[in-house]
Image 1: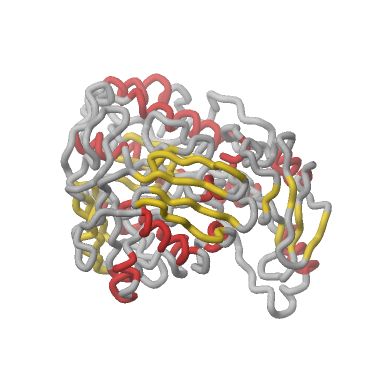
Image 2 (image 1 turned 60 degrees about the vertical axis):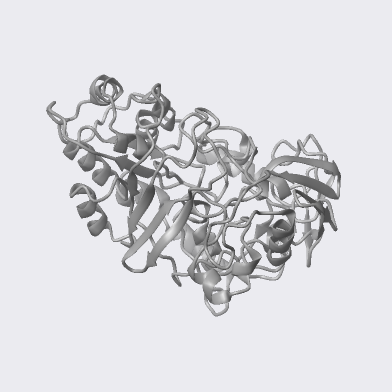
Length: 480
């Protein structure tokens, strides 16, 4: 690419916005995503462009100002390929066109299993929503604020919810929601007893227990009402239900451990048709799905299904499949790959996303043996790492430092400067150290507390706890 700083402004988006998109293009838009301290670059493509491709190379003159300490390359690309531009793409006024099969590269995880309550739970958070629903969720479309995920809670299986006191949250379920028509569940209706069963399992399950451990019991006064009673005020609970593996599954499936690990049976938009790692993952449309698109009123899902070859992050295989037209979208792992794909396919629609959600590469250390069990050694190793060299070299500028914050908690879109991140970290430094559970208190003045709007005065577990791997102590943050 020639060093043409005006190409993206004068040619890329005007050309994209002037073109009518194909059915496949519209399908692709719903799947574009990514993010993190290491920014994710996604592309969706189809067809050929008669116009000459953009000149090779990357523009070196930034069109936007980057805050001090923030990568100019990241800020420039993030601005040019911002999610907010999707709402203006051709075809949006006409609305989605139902049909088609979406193709993407899949990763099978560590065990290749589908037990959302087990060790694979965190990984399955990216794919469980294909087959399950939770009580609550957040907006996922081209028109919502994708950088403030926790600001707006919307109903999923629950159509209404209310917190009647500090220890009670009541959910009223949508009526007529059906599980997938697979044995042994056979398409029966979901009820509040299913919610109660899952909550009991989640109190001790690996991924969900931090969210459900304060749940004392779930009462079911009728088949569409679930009343959660807590042992302690749990200010975090509603937002934490947005975690995509806080889903409702069928008790009959859970009781057959082999089936539960092999076949997800939920209420979600797609029924898993084939799971054959390391070969392919296939889902077909759930004909009994209960949701409609709130913007268009059309029945969901729009897709007939999806087909995902399990390429397990094989970058060369993913790029080859995308170039051959066998994938509809790809996460470009490097900035140069993103640039090259755009040059090769001038009609691609690309997105560069930053937190949230977060993707932060890190080094995990075992702390049970010398010398790494010595905090001073770990601090010395940290000082040996030049973050800027990694950003400018390995990430080609498409990254920034991160301190494991979920930016959506703070009500402001990226970018944050490193100085601001450190200031937040310092402001959150604890005033009390405890051994065991403990508690912390927040008031409406706690601007850094994401739950301060909720009518709960005490929370037993503090989201912003500072901890050191698997050590048996932690620190409490007080904001009184």
